[in-house]
Amino acid sequence: MTYELIPLLVLCALVTYLPRAFPFFLSWMKRLPAPVRKFLSVIPIAALGALLFPGVFMEFSFLPILGIAGIAAAALLSWVFGGLIIPISVSIALVYILQVILTNS
Image 1 (cartoon, rainbow, N blue to C red):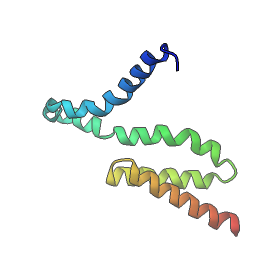
Image 2: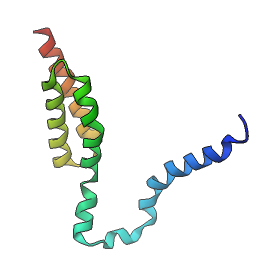
Image 3: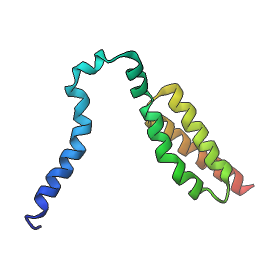
């Protein structure tokens, strides 16, 4: 490894670490106005949409109902439970099960 890459690696480590550590150091975020807190609470849903939409319509062009079902399940679960892990896991399982059912019949 050349020494030219060390600043790049340090910068990449900082860019990865800071967004994760940022909320722990900001105790003033609890005093944010209610509309700002509401806006920040929908960021996981927006991130879910940005992750899912492009890939879904390209991947499931042979059977678009799979993509639509996966998006609907993920959006509903994300809205009800919040977060990303449960909605993504359930939507993957649902799409897999529907693909097995619909392609084998």
